[in-house]
Amino acid sequence: MSRRVVRQSKFRHVFGQPVKADQMYEDIRVSKVTCDSSFCAVNPKFVAIIVESGGGGAFIVLPLAKTGRVDKNHPLVTGHTAPVLDIDWCPHNDNVIASASEDTTVMVWQIPDYVPVRNITEPVVTLEGHSKRVSIISWHPTARNVLLSAGCDNLVILWNVGTGEMLLALDDMHTDLIYNVGWNRNGSLLVTTCKDKKVRVIDPRKQQIIAEKTKPHDGTRPIRAIFVADGKIFTTGFSKMSERQLGLWDLNNFEEPIALQEMDTSNGVLLPFYDADSSIVYLCGKGDSSIRYFEITDEAPYVHYLNTYSSKEPQRGMGFMPKRGLDVSKCEIARFFKLHERKCEPIVMTVPRKSDLFQDDLYPDTPGPEPALEADEWLSGKDAEPILISLRDGYVPIKNRELKVVKKNILDSKPPPGPRRSHSTCESDFSPALEEVLEEIRALKEMVQAQEKRISDLENKLCQFTNGTD
Image 1 (cartoon, helix red, strand yellow):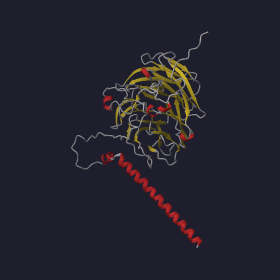
Image 2 (image 1 turned 45 degrees about the vertical axis):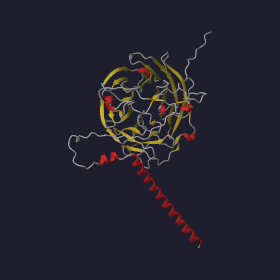
Image 3 (image 1 turned 180 degrees about the vertical axis):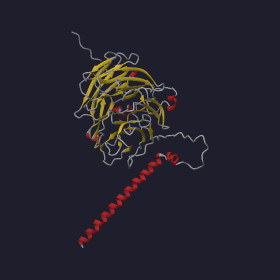
Image 4 (image 1 turned 90 degrees about the vertical axis):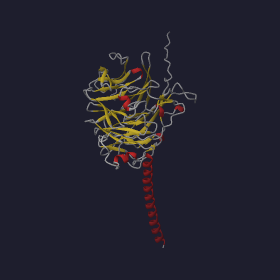
């Protein structure tokens, strides 16, 4: 009698667990906009969530440690004139976040380490180039200040945020609505999915499609695609019978899938999140109440089902913490931030281990916050792998670094008109430290006014009381 051999994997017993109730973020009015983006972005310092807001678009940014009930007057990031559709933290600066909106603009924001007193309304830079709503943004994984945006005008634009300029526009490649865009590990290639049922692999600097697959999934509903290890591409989509599928493809032979699996008949689009350090893909469906995870290996069937984390409530969106934001002392290999209608619930994925020592096999060196290239170097054709850091002693977020935008001035070639400095130059010289002091002074003024009012109220009551006893 042949015994079934169980495949050896250190991730076979990964299990998900929600945090305790007091570790959640409560009373957040999560956006109801119909869009297949994740609505949530997290990094080792902050969690950002797109929220409902009257007259324009907004998102809320909370320090990671500020759990519990969120004050209804907590400041928002408001600057868009229509709903925000996507947000993404800069991988090289934990205080910089980009937002894309229905108002056709992309805005980049500097978030202070302290909680501001008022709404943040002034972006560091506004990027204008799309003619229709912008639903996708994604930072370059290794080059500083390079940001990608894709809109409903079937256009992909690459920006240099440091100068506020457009680097490249990929305008003749997509014939219909773009569903998603993903970078490979060193940012030399893009993979896109489109309503015309094609998956394209693009070299953005040569502005060339280097590989293309029509109908990787036969169904009509949206497809998603991401790069995984060794240049392979992982897709999620639907069969003709509307069953959800996942596929694994080799870039060098795009005709036949390496693996194609059917999952279930739910109609939510599956959002794939990939952890390169463990080769695990997590699939979170919008409207699902579960997270499925699979390990990708070099042996058949190549995509191995590991387990499913299930809960009772469906998810409105999902944030995925970068590896450097995890708690290595608890063998945590992933952390999700699940959005409900009125709250955000962190879910921790751990590999059970008896030892308290640092687990080298679970935590290989991982991409850190230092960029490997400047925007100009990348544009000129240079590629570089991410600069890796060790998580052995845990990761300590670096201090707030200000994003400076240097606008190129067409008058630079002429002699300056005199010693007068322009308003915008003075403004850019404002250091974050001075901004912080001014913010504290404003907060103290408000506190003093509140205390004065309280004292006068108490004095009035005391007068009434003494008059009454006379």
